[in-house]
Length: 176
View 1 (spheres, rainbow, N blue to C red):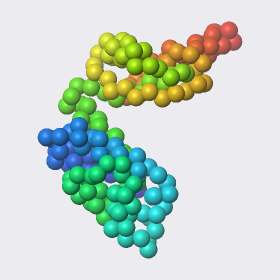
View 2: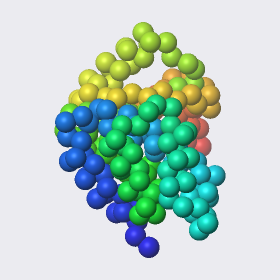
View 3: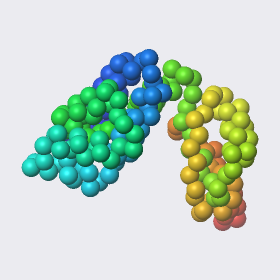
View 4: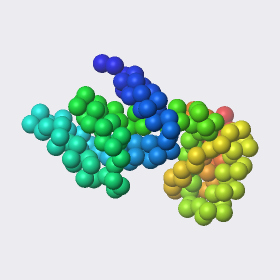
């Protein structure tokens, strides 16, 4: 069986080319559809041979928070008819990577032990952009196990300044 990334690539590239005039708008509805398609119960429903593609489309369109533009409806129908609904989250990931490459930015996830206010996040964002040398699209996730500090993941790069990481380093140094 082909890798999910291999299956998703042509869809992401075609959508990227077709929506070149409105990449940001496309990214919004694509992320929403990907989040919906990540639901295991929906995927079970879609895989049922007694369920038609039109029924799956109606369920997803009904769950979507915003009204889907015509391009989104057409894309969703294509994905459902080709049996690629489970690949939709990977399509969104690859689309975002193509969009970021054009804009010279990267997606970054900041894992924090505590909630961060807007001022703190802005300070962290500017420091991280200097550190990584590019514009970052930050998302914040709470991870209380860190005890304190933050862990940042940008693509395959990780910057871990958490207390948990420091304690692990101390543990390794003391047991070596």
